[in-house]
Structure formats: C-alpha cells, structure tokens
Image: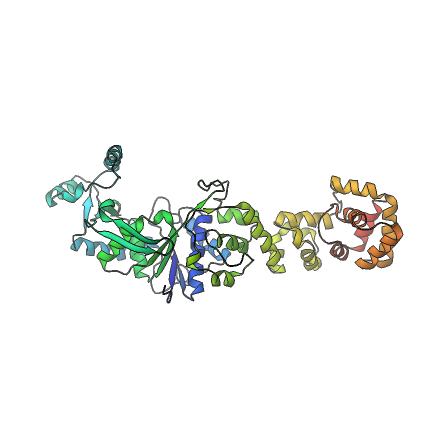
Length: 468
C-alpha cells in the first residue's frame, strides 16, 4: 500500500461536545498522518443550522488542543483551502450543483417527509429494502414548474446510475461491492438550500486533497454514494477505511454511563490527555507492545493492518490503568498544575516537588492528591479505623521509643528504623505499620522514607507524641 503524501482529516459536526467515539476517529487520523510525515486537517461540518453552535466549535478546538491533536490545516491555522467551515462554502458547492444539473445527473424532488415515510413503510411491509422509488425523477418540466409556483421547496436528488457495481478496497475491511440498484436516488441538497452530508463531505475531501479517510463503520453505506458523486464531478476520491464502532462491555451500545462521556467531563474528573490517548489508540487497534507511549511512539506504532474489524469494547478498568500510567509519567510541574488550588493551599510551595515524589505512586486523580495533602499537612490528622487499631496494638511504649529514635536521627530513615528496631525488638510489618499509621493516619500509602523527609519536625513529633 502506497502511503506517501498522506493527508487525513477530522470533520466533526459541531452539534455537541466531543465524546470518546469521535475523539478516537480524530486520533486515528492524526496518528496515520504523523506516522507517514503527512498532514492532518480539521474541517467543521456545520451545515445543520438548527443544531450547530459556535460554542461547540470553540469547545471542540479547545478539547483537541488539550489532547495534543494539533492540526496543520484548518480553523485558526489557515491554509490553501479556506474556508474550513462548511457554512462558509455555499458558493463553492453551488458551482458543483450547477455542474451536475448541466449533466442532468440531478433533479428536484418535491416529496414531503410524510410521503417518504409512507413509501418506506410500504416497501418494508412488502419485504423490500427501503429506497427512494424515483417519484420525482419522472416529472416533466411543466410539472416541476407547477409545484414551484405552488410554493413547494424541492430538495435536489442525485440520479444513481442503473445496473452499476460500485467497488472499492476498504482500508480496514478489504474489498467492498455495492449494487447501484440497491441504493436509490439520494438527496444532496436540502429544501432550505444547505448541502447534505453526502455531497459537501465528498466535495470538500476532494478539493482539500484528502488522501485517506478513517471514519466509523456507520458511514460504510455512504461510501458508494460518495464515490458515484465524485466520479460524476470528475473529482478524486480518497481511500476510505471504516472503523469498528465502540460498544459497552456487554456488547451493546455505549451508554453515557458506561463511557459515552464527553472529553470535557473526563477532563473535569481529572483524566490526563495522555491517558485518553494511550487508551483510545488501543481501542480497535493493536500495538506490538502494551506499554506506555508518548505521542511520537503512538504514531510510530500505528499501522492500518492492525485495525480490528470486530466491535471495540469500552473497558473502564483499562482507561483507569492508563490514567495511572499517565500520572507516573508526566512531568512534575504538569502534575502540580493538575492537582489544583485546594492542594496548593495545603502544601507549602517549597515542598511541591517532594510532595509529588512522595505521593505519585498513590495518586490517580486530583482528589487523591488532595487527600494526601490533608493527611500530610493538615493540622488535625484524621486517622482511619485500621490505623487506630494498629496504633492501639503497638502500645504507647512503641511511640515513646519512636520519639527517642527520631530525636536522635531526625529524618534519616534507615538509621531511625534500625534504632527503633533495637529499642523495641519488633521488625517487619509490626515496625513499619504503626509508624506509618501515626504519621499519615493510614496503614498504606507513600514510602515512609519520603514521608519523614517531607514532614516538618514539629509535625512528626506532635503526631508521634499523640500516640504515646
């Protein structure tokens, strides 16, 4: 497969916020372009006047940048194929509509939604696949004019050739064949004059030089229509690949509760962009090694032949795994910003790096960081029931010896525990667990050596004394 001069695109409709499904589509197209040193283009398909919102466009751009999915051509970047919002490309589409009209490849359709619904119902009742019956294709010019004079606003339908077989090789699913007789004439311009998806999407891909399109398998049936359109307009067609859809763990549709969450909601929960990228890059695509990867490594390992055809199952446990990996890999200054104001207010700024180093293995979300900020720097230590039991079993004498050992060795961890072992005669869990419980209020958590180095001497002494 020749993958030179790759140019991919992400072309969302701004009718809502980004969710996992369309983020994965954007990611796969971006990875394909980056692997082959190509270009990744962003186009806004905002021809749905009722549902498209400028606020959704702004959110989309922000979310893509937060994820690190930067585009090389498109909104706010510019490029040779402006404008990149379909709502601003009406004059361009008009030229191609006229071209199809001149070639008699289209005709006006005056059928109402109610008439079309009745036709579909009748066809299904008789065991036939629903398709447009060609009612308006047979109207004379006089009949068309009469309907226009009555104030009827027609759609524009593409006249599908009869007896054709449309064939293409899908980048994911291999050879595909569609009979034109099964398609039926389809709408390419709505009654309000705005372009239908089939038309604007295909024309823009051709004019913008898109070479490869990865999109959801729900678009597979659109492809033969678009290939026929581009052929009629004498425009080049991209290579299409249709990705398996994401489903829930039970194999059913991905519900909002199970992961249809938007990027904004996941970000608000504290997910890091690197976690989402590492997870989504493996959702329907297999890497040779299942290890943490940066953006460049994800792109280098992205291979079309490793895209799966089976539905990709959403697994929250795996997403949490990659979130844990992200926390372990991102730079300390990134983690400090991510932890947020509540942590900043509790942890002295001069101890931020030590705090991050201490708690990083025990943190998955900002709420976890806040918990440890309160446990380590709060005035009143909240001890768990388990830690209280451990402290009681150790007895006050243990902590008297711990105070003496700390007074002698300070935060020098190994000398301190060696001294405490000699003084008390205990070792292992019986030695470390009471000390941890006294200092952190928990029986599990950050390494004791880091806790001792992090806490100020007066805090350590106060907490040990409270257990005597």
